[in-house]
Amino acid sequence: MTMPIKSICCLGAGYVGGPTMAMIAAKCPHIKVTVADMNEQRVAAWNSDTLPVYEPGLDAIVASALGRNLHFTTDIRSAIAGADLIFVSVGTPTKSYGIGAGRAADLRYIESAARLIAEVSEGHKIIVEKSTIPVKTATAIKSILAANSPNGATFQVLSNPEFLAEGTAVEDLQSPDRILIGGEITPEGNAAVEALVSVYANWIPRERILTTNLWSSELSKLVANAFLAQRISSINSISALCEATGADVDEVARAIGMDSRIGPKFLKASVGFGGSCFQKDLLNLVYLCESFNLPQVAKYWRQVVQLNDWQKSRFVEKIVRTLYNTVNGKRIAILGFAFKKDTNDTRESPAIQVCRDLLHERAHLAIYDPRVSAETIHQDLIAAGVSPELIATNMEICSDPYTAIKGAHALATLTEWDEFRTLDLPRVYGLMLKPAFVFDGRAVLSLESLVAHGFEAFVIGKGL
Ligand code: UDX
Ligand code: ADP
Image (cartoon, rainbow, N blue to C red):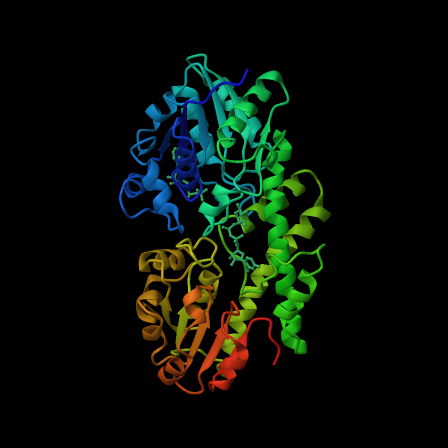
């Protein structure tokens, strides 16, 4: 018999946990949803008018349920104790130390969450992995739970990977292509899977809810992101060839994308992919292949990351070479710092590497992003190895694009914010030093139009 779920808790109020739980609460008024996080500031922000995550449409979803059946708290223990079903949505960064450094996922937050769940729980609970995790993490969680439950609690562990993309999280949660739930193939496992299916079935058609074994579910998440990232590296590799030959990468993408076997999505050439998932999941996949002694497979997927790194560095080289081999002391306006439009997230944003390298070339950067705070930009660059002194002397954050552009030798677009498509080009040209150089890393500007307005222009993937 399916266990009816009355109370859900989620550990981790981040980019995944917050929006996902808000949607569940909005769609299931009969279920109490508590999101618990030890980060007091984050919890306070979720309870305020300024949410910690910027997502179009999210404010309304949160407002519809907050205080009714949606609660954000730092009281993690009570949240666990009161829940039938617990989502684990804590961060899983790439390990920066020890064995597997730079590739394997750091599971310390998952492990401490599992230990706390074991300690606090009584009765039967369903634990759902929501974080992106390496395959076989469920086994680790299960063994921690089994070995540390003083109150004799019993557990079923499910995998329910998140496929939402930032910037479209609300849409993706509202009508996902599919929901994937993996569980143990036993009567208890099947019952737990059914309990979670019944939560999603409140708004998602049954045929879009797939159930698999645990390992298929865990692996599917890595493979989905690896395939998506691979398409971007594929088109980015072709962008370089287009620039060399005089072809236009968008025309090539359109021509190949009309083949229904290839399809039109995820073929937009760029300065490189970013975001918290692609690189991390690719590296996880590489590490997994190496662990299972499949070096050829590991090498194949590693190349997707390497091409992405090359794409970012060749963009910087293009700027430096074009500006007469030196950017020392030159003002460069940077438009966009987020890893893509419609988000304030900067994790693994290509802008970090590009700005770091330009600062190390002693350029003077004037950065504008409509959503990313100055504090985040500072923190990201310091974490990337830029010295605070260099930041203090060579970088400024501007509150509008034209201030950034004023007096600049060059302008580089690094995020495809819609507002950059409608920049007033005569005004931009008038504000810049001459020759006025534009490096469009997102192909948001038209090469023809830039040239017609007098700019010396480079647009990614467009040969002259
Ligand atoms: C991704 C997956 O899409 C999502 O399913 C998963 O759950 C989490 O990881 P996200 O990182 O939010 O989502 O963003 P996504 O839209 O996939 O973009 C990732 C990066 O690729 C961005 O930097 C984006 O600018 C870049 N990109 C995307 C391109 O350069 N070209 C494209 O055609 C598409
Ligand atoms: P994601 O993009 O996967 O949502 P984030 O880093 O945005 O990742 O969010 C993860 C959140 O999980 C952070 O706010 C962090 O404070 C929280 N967290 C980490 N460990 C725990 C834990 N044991 N219990 C509750 N929250 C946790």
